[in-house]
Image 1 (cartoon, rainbow, N blue to C red):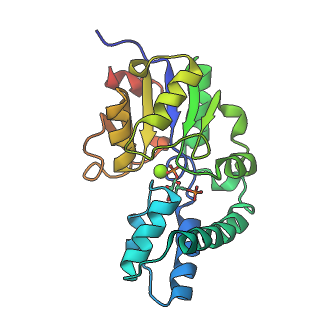
Image 2 (cartoon, protein in one colour):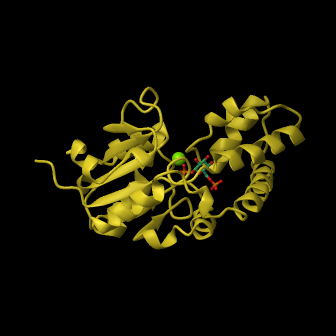
Length: 218
Ligand code: B16
Ligand code: MG
C-alpha cells in the first residue's frame, strides 16, 4: 500500500533558484587562470555535483593533476568568487512558479525541507527570502555523502519526522533523482524528460506543478 504524501523535499540549484550561472562564471574564471577554456556545456557536468568533485571534473578537462592542498586552495578561491556573486542575489532570482508552489505545499499541510549539496544554501535562502518556507534545511554542511547517495534526503525526512515513503523529492539532476530512488522516495524531475527519465513525473519547472498533481505519484 502506498502511504499518503506528507512532505516535499526540494533541491536548491536548478529547482528553486538558478545559481548554476554563478557556479559557471566562477569555474570559468578559475579555468582561465589555469590556462584552459571551460564551456557552458562543460558546466552541465557539474550540476548537482559537490564542490570538490566539480573541481576534479574541471581539472580533468584541463588535463591537470594537483596535490590535495593545491586543490583545497583552488576550491576556496572559486568559492570566494561564487559567494561574492550570490551575496548580491535577491527574490527576483527565484525560479518561475517556485514560490507559489512552496506556499501551496504549506497551505496543504505538507512539510517542506531543503535537500541541497551546496554549502552556501543559507546565503541563497536568506537573500531570496525563502528561509521561512522551510521546516528543515539539510545541505552540504550537514552531509558526508554526495548524491546519488540518499543521505541528504534521508536526513531531511528524519528532521521532518516522516518516513521516506511519505516524501517526494523535487530535483533537476539525474544524481538527485537516483538519490531519491535509493532513499525509497518518489521524485519529480524538473527539466528534460529524456535526461530525468527515472523520475516518477517530469515537469519543465515548478510553474507546471500543483499540489493536485502530486496525486499522479501515488
Ligand atoms: P557549493 P544543489 C549544488 O546545488 C550545485 O548544483 C552544484 O553545481 C554545486 O557544485 C554544489 O551544489 C555545491 O555547491 O560549492 O555552494 O557548496 O543542486 O544540490 O542545490
Ligand atoms: Mg540541483
